[in-house]
Amino acid sequence: SYVLTQSPSVSVAPGQTARISCGGDNIGDKGVNWYQQKPGQAPFLVVYDDEFRPSGIPERFSGANSGDTATLTISGVEAGDEADYYCQVWDIRSGHWVFGGGTKVTVL
Amino acid sequence: QVQLVESGGGVVQPGGSLRLSCAASGFNFSTYGMHWVRQAPGKGLEWVAIIWSDGSKKYYADSVKGRFTISRDNSKNTLHVQMSSLKAEDTAVYYCAIGGSSLDHWGQGTLVSVSS
Image: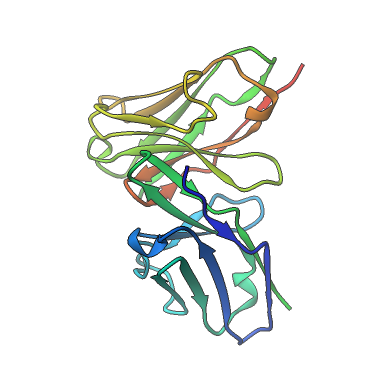
């Protein structure tokens, strides 16, 4: 089955840029979605289909996808961005939806 | 606005069964695929199952295939998952979510605890 690999944690100072990577075999051929989850809350979608933001998501959140790596970038990080972030793809071949293991973003 | 409310969680013994429901409102339920996703305590997200908008197709994670059955009642705007032969490793918060390739809106989840 298809596997997505994320680094367990990223630390970033306020105002700086956080980059969260998601690795997968030829992931560039798939549409990648990203979710934010804060403690005790349900996840919600912050980027879909590699690079698009749902209504209400700040422009500070951006996505890119090429080769074997997709990246979620958070520019001008704020304290409220501290959360777990998950990448996800639809593996059409298996008919399965797949999540990465999650990356905890800590704002210093 | 879109609202998804899960119910039916609780404590169940290993080998037991449980049926979860997800009540949907604020959107045209019958035109959207629906997912179940779970999260074990302190762990990441695990996709469980999807059902097509008309119920014509269903896909399951290998970990639940043969034990869980996803269904929907478009006349009542309700999604279900029937869980049987439950194991300790099925203990998790179960979320329903709207979507196709992406999961666009999520409920708040319902906790299932499998324990003797």
